[in-house]
Image 1: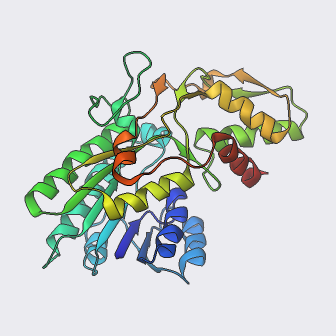
Image 2: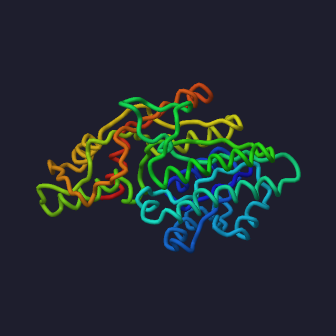
Image 3: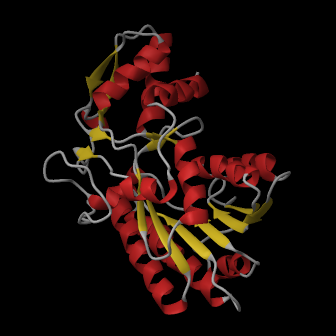
Amino acid sequence: MNVLVTGADGFVGSWLVPRLVEAGHSVTAAILSEDNPERADKARGRFDAVADVVELDVRRDESVQGVAGRELDAVIHLAAVSSGAQALKDPMAAWEVNTVGTVRLAEHVARQRSGGQPRFLFVSTGEVYGAPDGEMSFDERSATTPTSPYAASKLAAEVGVMEVSRRTGLRAMIARPFGHTGAGQDTRFVVPSFARRIIDGKALNAVAVPVGNLECVRDFTSVHDVVEAYGLLLEHGEPGEVYNIASGKGTSLRDVFFLIADAVGTRIIPEVDSAFIRSADIPYLVGNATKLRRLTGWKPSVSLEATIKEVVDACA
């Protein structure tokens, strides 16, 4: 298939593009130089030999129109304001990119097809479910009650993409990944953030490092397993459907902290600092990926311990 990957210069995109190329797909890797030139340059260096690298800014109609006019069999849409903290600082930017930009892309991809409609996999987030009543895992039938600009903008994009799909025949699907990490993720996200602070603390012989709320429970999956799920959904996902991508196992951030400390080789302790506490933190966020597993046979293959070691090695 001729596959367009948006946000190819991001953390997940850097792992997804090679996976798709290895699977025999012809990949167009869409990057954005304006917001992060250094990251875009690195992506060009990685992908120039294996993919067609193009510029794409989903905020601009002419940019989207140019990329969407290519001969495409499929789109995996990753480009987003992907940090919840960043979205909270500038909610309107999150709505512009995550919602309006996503619907703009879906609309142009659908509008410019003279023959059959491409497959369109929109990567949303498990955060659309919000906070559960107690400690329950979410499946695709669970109510969606987002509690942050990031999650709300993603859920609104889901609605928009599915409306475009019903009206135009675009073969759209939604992926809702829960927490995932690996080498290359930046320190706006919890696992590499802990790893960086613990490594630096060890180097300074610190007794403790600052943290936020460690009682939150999250569902972590390796980025390698997540991109495998995207590849499987690209080939086998059913248009109109929503699929969770999750391990189904909850781990407290306290346990994650000490797993990272063990991997670093230090007995450093966490010290709660109000500067790191977010008012909208979801206390328990765990997903159920039975639907994906039944359709494709997918299941996580990389342990949390191995994933954490990969992050620590990358940060060292």
